[in-house]
Length: 159
Length: 134
Image (tube, rainbow over the protein chains, first blue to last red):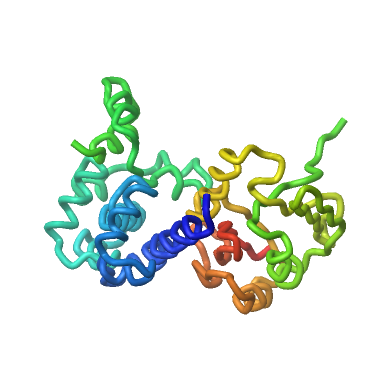
């Protein structure tokens, strides 16, 4: 592993950290590529190779994760949550949320989330974090009898 | 019979370059330094927990090239496990950390929904650290 290869990984990490930190702002892939000091095309390709999903997919997953946390609180409407996490289109937000979480944001908001109350607060973030997973693992947990959380995650796997 | 933690290991690409962060900003005290085969190990400790050694070492130290490469890549891309520290004065500690060259601030001191007040940074090597108000 050369120093240049490690430096490229560090620059990709900075772009990913920026998404974690600034997801609520109007980020786009060219701006993230500039953070990584790369061309947009090279950045998108290398990010996908290193982290297993495209930068846009990572950003939307992060937004959906934060949206789910806000919806569980129950004191914000779906529209408010959509804008709060940096999405500008309610339609594309709802579609992406449904794809990743396995149910529309309105249904998720209305559902009982008390089962999470037994989990220490800082672990809820980890437990509910949607994550791209290998297709085989997603298929396995999509089998009947899998937990609801696994079914939700499986829906988010690439078709 | 009781069991306690005696040492924890932190991977950094250059233990000497990590000292401004771990020694000067976090305030840990350097205990030992060992160099062998081109690698360096530095152990530090907190005044509050002098029995726990915090050991800085390099990804390739004592490992095959392939395993060292794998760990170095995980460190660089930010996928090693997070480290958690607690301190008595989060704001003062954070100020020192944020002024340390190479540190990347991920979250300024803030109240968390789970009740803690904490901040999050990457050390100059890329490790994720959460620092909580004790």
